[in-house]
Image (tube, rainbow, N blue to C red; front, side, top):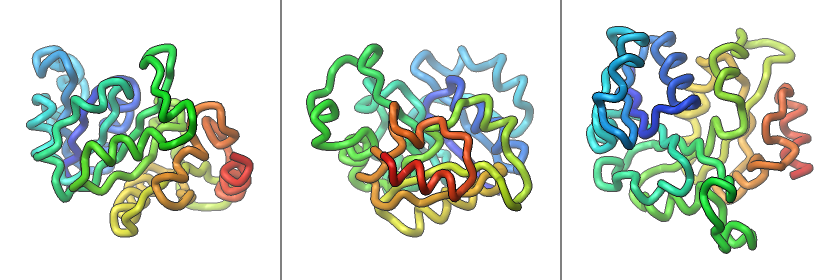
Length: 208
């Protein structure tokens, strides 16, 4: 059993928490408004869920999911995430986040910016290109035609940890390569939201 910390408890965070609990993990949820605002969600999720501050969720997690609006990435606590695998689900929506010239000009990517903020963590980009509801409903046993999700990261062991989690959720995994290649499944790319198997995902990433 693993404890998964969640920094952010919106649609994606809640979906990941729900699937994680179904797979026997404990979850520690947090958001920007405080643990008291998560009482109803924790009660719904059951005994394997608890609410905490972002600092506490980061410290408690063996694996931590950052699932906040991109503009809030600098608020993610650094010290308690040292040495940990961190899943980045963020997407850049300039309409919500404001303009970031380094992203608009393609000089870096969302996950690389989070990784720069978390220099002692092992950041893996995942779960950004699937609808939150599908995380709960689309998983299937291993076999031909199973839906695939893309990941990207610079640490092979960290990517294996995330691959194993995604596989347990019922999805195949396609490794897009280093963290910089995560841009291939960002918003408006062919792989973003693609409901395809592994072969289809590889083609979509290549087209991105």
